Image 1 (cartoon, helix red, strand yellow):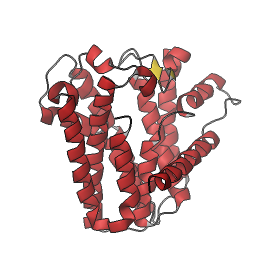
Image 2 (cartoon, one colour):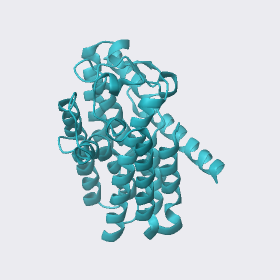
Image 3 (spheres, one colour):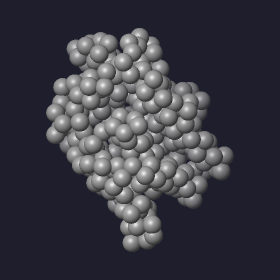
Image 4 (spheres, one colour):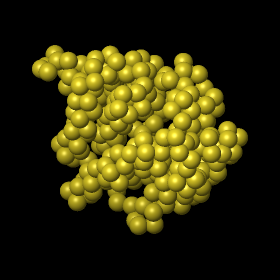
Length: 297
């Protein structure tokens, strides 16, 4: 079963990579440096966890994988843009991402800012350009969901809370609020948008799926916090220990490593419970959940 999942994941990661190579603007076209920087940022790195979640959720609704691929790429482009901006000196001021110099180090800050802007625009262009759902109404809901996930009530808002929390002590509910927005919102969007590419799910199915996505989004961040504490820079592909160095509140700083690991397992259990309604059609979502929880532990 593990090797089956690994084959499934590698196949879809390769599909995402090939499609990104095609859909990102060629560096041969003006403005060449901007296009080159966009490709540098997005291609050849990352586990593509959000696309994997989109594909797995698409299986619940028997979605066409060509549709899911475009939807997954849109989410991945938003994620990539957020990383470029997060790494800027005015944010986290990091020099390493996915094992190579960050965009503003490899190019410059102005280009990095424009790369983020351009990736965000391309994400919404793709969602509008391709037919991804059975009805225009559902497709508009997909666009709306991604916009909300990326904005001030989602990822950008979570980042604002994160920056305002440096050097402060947060309670566990306050930390959870921050990461439901900063990290969790885009993961929830990946799951829900992937499912929207197929047949309509009923209200109970959508409620259970969203609850699953909320739990796995938080679990993802808990694991990230543990890895930032315990893994090496070479393993992470980004600067290890950055959160502690910047005096940021994390699940590890509040709970300690062992309790953070326990929380990740509790969130996995809750995520699994949300999928019981779907039976075997949620097998891939369970496998991606395990992949998220167990990565580099």
